[in-house]
Length: 102
Length: 272
Image (cartoon, helix red, strand yellow):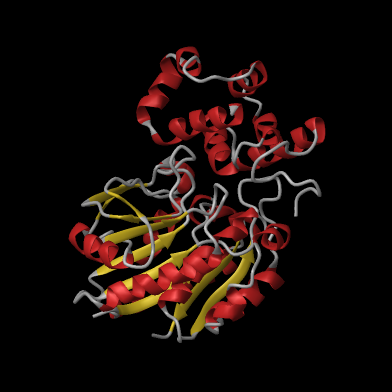
């Protein structure tokens, strides 16, 4: 359920100008509206883009959050590669398979 | 009047957003194919363009995810993405709500679907419009097939949707163009972004352009995932076009893997 909340937050940030205003002016208040684990809060705040990917956040949400946080495209890709090496394979979601990526 | 134009093309955000990082020769040939498609589309004199896309959490999320949704809005807007990131300026695009309603009512005779009077376009629709209707002056009816949040609609249901859409188009007087837009093999927005299975793509396109229904519907999602990436699930948009053009064959106007665009870049037109 918690991954759902992480993705819901990023969904709102991507599409809702009001959510982006909250991000700029009251990020903690915005985050408080979502039930998130400490690991998730840390990954969102830092931001640890690679950890969010390993947690299972869909790239179609994550790439826009990465751009919002100033990640150029190549840096975004590299952050995922680096953290997959650091944290291990994707835990759940569209990219997770026991046999690894295709 | 029914369909006056049908085709399929790519929509990856890198096509416009990372255009300066591609091999100019291949990129320009790809852009030229899009423009050839624009000319053919305009020559068909459509009243409206139906874009069968696979959006990416611009409007629909797992709190309420339709397998199929058809736009019924008076006006749409996009892109939702940062304009500089996508390389496309913000635009408003007219809809065709009254025609949408008639089409939806007929499709619903055989296929359940959702409709939406609000819809923000993401790159999945804005990238094709950027090339095909660069003045944004052709009314659009967006269609979304959920290709992102499993469980996903079976391929055979996408085909049946396409057939129902064609039947609905046949019953109205307007001249209607339809394009499907999606990746074939690709691993977008992941560490494997840029990986493209050209052999798989060309085999799929051969079936699509040959109108080979049974072979198209024989694809399995687990195999697609392994060989064509999670982006391969977007073949659903092509298969819907195949259903709408059942009995027709098509021509491949462009195909080339362009890794910085993260997709095998495709422009194809059906002979209807």
